[in-house]
Amino acid sequence: MKPLIKWGLWQRRWSIMWWSLGVLFFIFINMIFYPSVRDQAAQYNQIMSQIPQGARGLISDTADLLSPTGYLSSQIFYSMLPLLLGFLAISLGSSLVGREEREGTIELLLGRPISRTRLIVGKTILGLTILLGVGLIGVLSTAIMAKLVGLAVPFKDIIVAGLVCVMLALSWGAIAFMVTMLGRGAKAASIAVASLVAIGGYILTSLTGTVKWLVWPARAFPFHYYHPGEILNGICRWQDLLFMVAVIVVCAIISVVAFRRRDLVNN
Image (cartoon, rainbow, N blue to C red; front, side):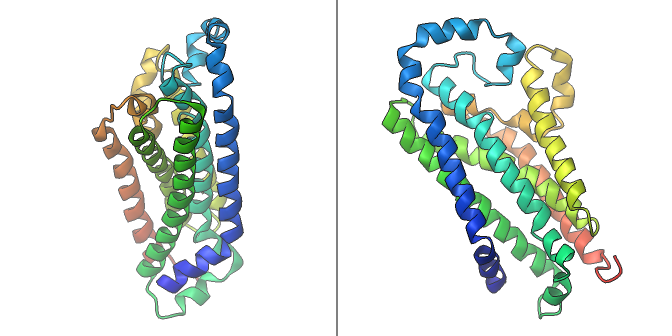
């Protein structure tokens, strides 16, 4: 299994590098403007007050967008970082095994002394390693930039918010991975389904502040249980993570069962 993981990391080394640089770039761009925003808080507050509440819900889960925690939530943790890590997770989930099937190399892998279960576990560890690596780079760079630009948010809270963000992205990636395991050529469907869950959950959750009846359908999506504003203020409702964990576990079980039962030769 270790050679499989090492080879996968080597194959994706350039992709990992570009993803890491991209995350660093977007975080730097968003954080570098905080001092100027802070110094012109009165003008920005006047502009923000004219934005409808529904639109503000799409920006952040905090009321004060210009406070240290509000700025971090709106600029990094509520949309930008989940979006980037979500794209990465969904891409990995749809291609870890899907690319092998599309290129016709899956049979060569299974021809080696490795079971289907070990193969899928190895691919899962590979995806987790890449996502966690890029995610940690993003979280640590955010914490460092926050210190440099004078954002008074505890380092611990930034780390926790980042890890929960990675967990959210992982749940979307697990959905894409599960759909891919259901049949050959399901890569496009896996990306569509996982993206629908990610974007749909984001929109529904963001609008629950103004459209109350959306609360119930929003509860079916992982994003509903993601509260970066509260976490950055030192409040982490760990029970909310149970939903994300449940999604990941269920998708993992279905993926293993489906892959073990598939006819990869005639499928």
